[in-house]
Image (cartoon, rainbow, N blue to C red; front, top):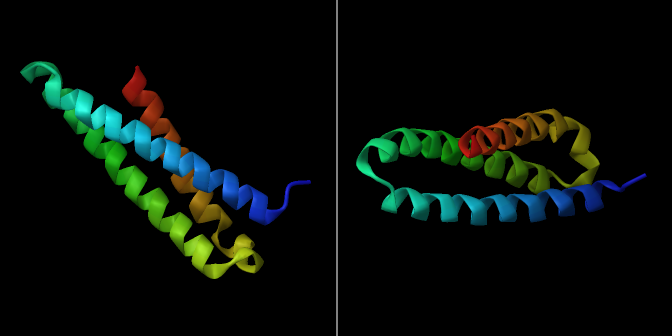
Length: 92
């Protein structure tokens, strides 16, 4: 069974990866055509908002420490799912 610390480490790496992907998508949006840019930008803004929420939830979890994992687990996992869904929607 994976320890809480290992799980948190994986989450941190995944969050960093999502941040890099988000930066690349934002750069891509800047060069898109006007019509596509508006819709794409709306979806990117939604994605960025979800990223900020996930980042904040993760920071709360790290500040609380592994002994309080159960207290923060639900909020972090919800934010993660929403961020993952936003990335998936943007790819489609």
